Length: 354
Image (cartoon, rainbow, N blue to C red; front, side, top):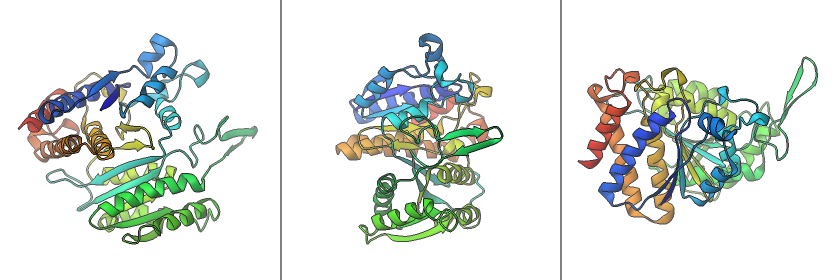
């Protein structure tokens, strides 16, 4: 497996280092054949190369089976014309990462607002109102006159179709085999109406799946009231960005949320949270999100390549992280524990090697 590793900004280098310690333990236990290339992106690249992301970095990612991407301090970047490229967005566009997969589940021993949750968000990843990435040339946001700003959203049949197939494939492999399509079609009749109709059409190819649809505001409430009703949730980009964060917090913490961006040729594991520059370098960051994202990456690539060792390694990494989180004595401080980033990584490594 050819792997590109990009530590990122803020706490990114710390949690990436912790994650790679776990990867090396997996490599040792399962005899994985990994080729790892480390790249600089973000503020380090800006200082050294004058740009946060170079074209050659994207080309290296294209050649890889997968990328482990640390969080980026985009708010600290200069304007794009001064080299401040949104690294995450550029990866998604350049690598055509059209689906974002975000599992949200409650864990034994981990305090959570939700009593029971085990669901997967599948979020269309390149369209909607993300104006910095939804146009071929230019951006979808402009100011025609002072005091007036217009933003252009984009939903396409093909973009919806691709995300819907990912959601249906996941749903068919899960025990409940249920898909919920989220929208606001009564108001955005054409815009979300297209998303809903295309998603339903795709789902017809999966007769074993139970399909329903709900308004986005209803889903926001039901995630609090009855999260156990959801299995796989297919959702447009912006709604999905918001509600997957809500679900992650209800399940325990955004710091526990794995996230995988994938297209047909490349896959990017990325922590669901930001770069938290206020705690960078203090050995207090929780690396669970990036570790769990990496487990998702190994599982996806392993299934694609029919590599049983990669699939087993993915399962071991997820099980090890969840097992360490179960005890208050081995949790990180954000979850009421006493461990720092390095100590948590060591605990996960020891669990992997048991």
